[in-house]
Length: 261
Ligand code: IPD
Ligand code: CA
Ligand code: CA
Ligand code: CA
Image (cartoon, rainbow, N blue to C red; front, top):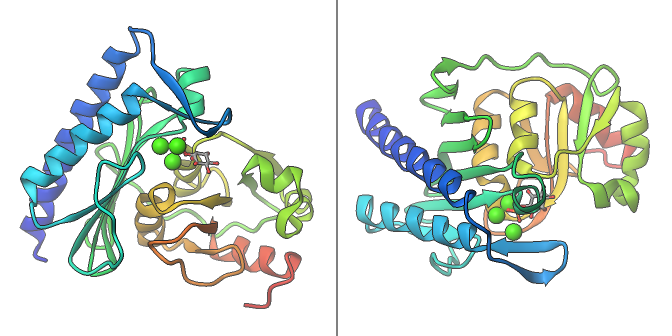
């Protein structure tokens, strides 16, 4: 795809995201309609659903031949990644949205024939949009974001999901112990922003495609490693333990969890 086409898509997605942000802020002045999906720790609100419908309608008008994977189910049933595939998480960190009214993000990714092209993570309250891809570079709002330094696990902070630490999945208590300290923010998007900016050296969690679709594109564009927790390639249509890390931190983590990859 040529650069002017990429810029045209980028401008459109940013317009939708700014409208989405305004919509969410407006809705936060009203009472939320909150319901449980699989249980009390898995919530969805009217705003998640309405925002997903809005973003999907924009994508359908802009690129009608696309497939769309949306968390709340208003997109398509996707079985293969040929052609244009958009991945939408209308509110990442719904629990934070409900309980804290902060620390949540809107995420959109565009893949073409399985290759990441553009990724967007928008921290709504912080008004911080991480955007870009392999051909455009990565931006923090309008500023070019430089690749983070290749810091080791020992010298950096790490984000790991609560359950991974509590249940010691993949020996992650030792990984955390080896690092400079643990941070848990409760939104994959917000945690990935910290890795992209070099504020943490890794983020590890069990994630679904809409949780990692945008972050994978942005992180790989900055030279970060994005794999399953044991260092294997991610499947765009499957959930897995996902690790986004500096190359050094990844090399430090793999032996601790007993993987030689
Ligand atoms: C969740 C958040 C959370 C992560 C969960 C995700 P959602 O996304 O990113 O940090 O630990 O695995 O499901 O449901 O709030 O969009
Ligand atoms: Ca959810
Ligand atoms: Ca999510
Ligand atoms: Ca969500």
